[in-house]
View 1 (spheres, rainbow, N blue to C red):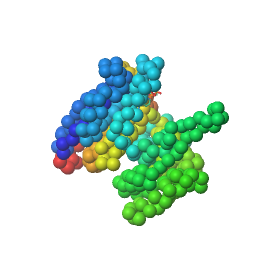
View 2: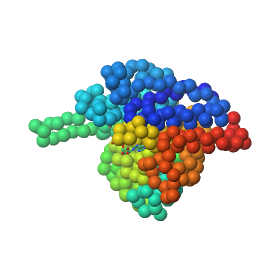
View 3: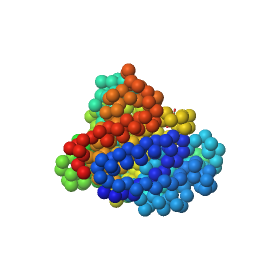
View 4: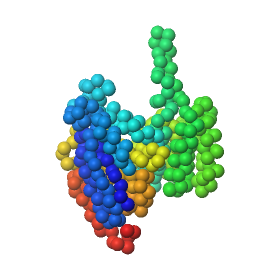
Length: 364
Ligand SMILES: NC(=O)c1ccc[n+]([C@@H]2O[C@H](COP(=O)([O-])OP(=O)(O)OC[C@H]3O[C@@H](n4cnc5c(N)ncnc54)[C@H](O)[C@@H]3O)[C@@H](O)[C@H]2O)c1
């Protein structure tokens, strides 16, 4: 398979972790007989410094021609005082919009060696492995422009969804559940909101097309509670934009480390942008100590969701798990009796595992 991948390192540790993902993808390409063609472009603060804009046209054009995009992170104190239209984050929002990325996927998996660092009791989080599918381009954050009326005494934000917007995210969630354990929880507020009633209707209509997926509906308040009392009861959660924003951050603490969480933002044709959940970590940038695993796991999502390379994705995830099980970890993690390594060494350990797969384990 030949695929074009645009790399957007961005700022801070983005540069270090994107290197790591590229090295691991090259190992996968070599072992499984694929070619990944990489092209690097500017975004965020580094683009502001060299081109005066957080999202240069050439970056957008390259991403539009690509099969997938890997993004490190943007931002840092250097650019905090700039006017809002010039902030690094504008580059990120701009590229998501330019590519029409409507589906945000966040897998949250508790790695056994790290669970003791979770703020929840180990017995509660053990075995948690869930995927949040969040609608990303509709709802409250994209309604009519917000309004202040009556001399600041009334404010109005609008929550609008079209049937099409709901259908495409619900389809994506059913398909994701088919690739996993076949259980879908649709989260809404159908006892109050009209948009949630339509959401629930669409899920009910769609489930006929996915007889292998078991569906349940849950109100968002109950879902928030169940996520921390019984996280292992979830497989795939699908929800609208704002509920997804809140629930995905809540769920991200389950694993006990920001440096382990990948994400994918997808378009209808499967083109996607893949990035770690963490930011540019200016406090540790350039020191060679950043945890590259969230970025590597994001690249694994790219293989699975944009290229359909499920076996290769699984091998990358297995490599990460294997390295942690052997006790290696970066400084942000804690493993009992473990060994601290830097970004490059951690990457090499993952790469070495992939090269160690025998020919019978890789289907070329
Ligand atoms: N998607 C993005 O590009 C994105 C997301 C969040 C924040 N940001 C930006 O990043 C900058 C810093 O934000 P922040 O400090 O709130 O969040 P952050 O995620 O960058 O860092 C929070 C803390 O976690 C640590 N950390 C994060 N990722 C790590 C990794 N891979 N390895 C080791 N340690 C890691 C950092 O050192 C820091 O102590 C800000 O400019 C913010 O706007 C960007």
